Length: 308
Image 1 (cartoon, rainbow, N blue to C red):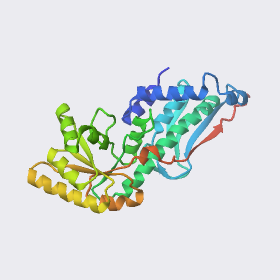
Image 2 (spheres, rainbow, N blue to C red; image 1 turned 90 degrees about the vertical axis):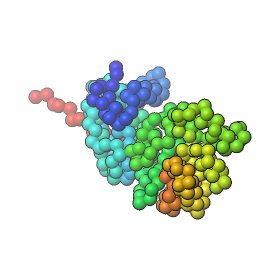
Image 3 (cartoon, rainbow, N blue to C red; image 1 turned 45 degrees about the horizontal axis):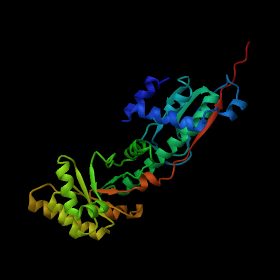
Image 4 (cartoon, helix red, strand yellow; image 1 turned 135 degrees about the horizontal axis):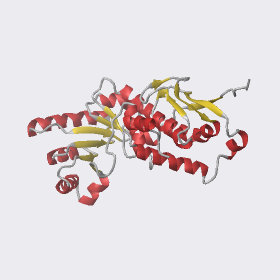
């Protein structure tokens, strides 16, 4: 059975592909059951018992992945569960906030619980970490941005969670934008040569070039880079780099190249880095190291009706 239309609509409204989400959920549920059944629930819960389960925050943060969690219950219950989305992705939550309420067969709810929470807690953790950076950068021109340091198979969802937290996405794949890094420079024989090679083969593609010195910056600006990644620059160097980019744009008549700071940055650095005038701050930890947001599942068995 496919996802019910209301669940499909909620996933699509979030900018996600319902087919991708459903396939991911079916694979994760299959991994959990490993060809069998939920033996604990089958032994302890009557087949006809029905309950209501609330997914409730235990910590403060930003919610992300609520429609995905809803889809887990829809898949496991084969469309039997009644699902009520109480909160919305991108919402700032505090302990005790209910994100999702589901009523259905108790066995289905318990079987779906861990998969739903795994996804919801992780995605909300990514959104929460991103929001912390976005808050720290408020009042500066810089935006927080993710990287390709994502969990294999979860990139689409993790980058969605970054957007929920107020961040912006870098490239989604190796094919939708070019990023010339140090090893490309070594292989091509120089930073300008590497840039020219990409521009020649893919003339319409946006090209970002990583530099680790101010002298390299001037070279790639002369070559025509759209975006420059300042690798492991300290704030004073970033400020100089912004000045060089502004001056280069004035002399060349071209728009100023955008600058992105990356490498070893921490949340305590955010305000100082943002104040240098860089356009983006790239932080891999948003996706590869974000702590989960604690969300729990509270079960409320429905009182059986007593025959008159």
